[in-house]
Image 1 (cartoon, one colour):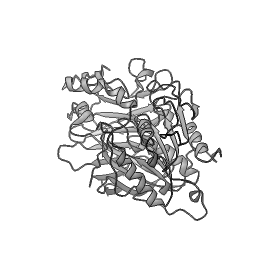
Image 2: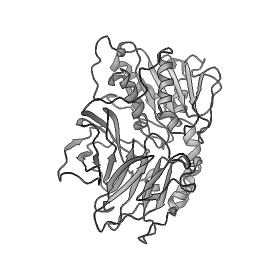
Image 3: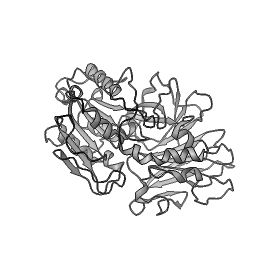
Length: 444
């Protein structure tokens, strides 16, 4: 298995920057659209389609979608397109079919296309065909490889290139003849998710008009959440997966009641919701895939201030890159397995602070700038009931985005695991990794 992982991770960096992998067209690109109010901004703008990067999913764009909706964009004009980032394909025809579905659904003549990292190469290549390029009003290339000219076979698609000198994956890329925006201080993931990137995109799409706000504006005491149930990396939809939502004690992560507040079932394409929940309230999202051998995953989120249509619940696939890498996660009721996901930026030593149970994890060894850590797995790898902070062998071949450390969470006595990221707190319960499943703490 080590040889397989080494072979896969040797091409990891190339896959993250080069585009084009296989993808899927969902029958219904927007299963829960809102009807746009007459005379709104929705009448005068094109739908936006976002393409995520390697090992990512549509929730890369959750904050940007909420910023667009905060500025009057209707839900039926905002789309995240999921594709299999570890499949190795190059079929732009599936993306083309999805775009055609969006155009038919919205009645618009063109779309705005946005791609990040590997999704940037994917979007750029899509525009190389003249017929396809005619469907794209503007193209935005974020944190991806430099190009010699704007998108389109004849450079006909107005192109915005957003990059950062502090993106240590793609670098400070430019496109000759395009509008180039540089965002210092932003890491490879953050360059796509930050408010400054939204501001640049909005102005580019609207002919220089500034957004009313770059904030995610609150919506009151209740919000709606919806999203997808998919496998990690592959983004394979989990048809008929069960999603249970529990309100939890914000100080412990423990459920306030034994039965779920809401129980939902994902449709054939993995979509679930919408579900109305309390704003600014801590919830647990439990996903049970229904696939034999799959582990139950428990997601703990910060409170939602605005309706979020891109709440993704990922499970671990059985096989493939992600499945091979994570197959060694313990199934041991004497310990918890915790994954920490920072959904809008990496954790970088010297800039960020990540502390778990009073142990600092944002160290030069664990979160150096060149590793761009987005997700961190913590478990007692050597099963000695001690926190050693050594790196599990399985993760020693991964150079970007993911990391792991030996960290012991006891389960003999129910207790809270306390996480603190850049001054924001989350508390999750010490679930048993075999009986209960895997814990995922998400900092939005």
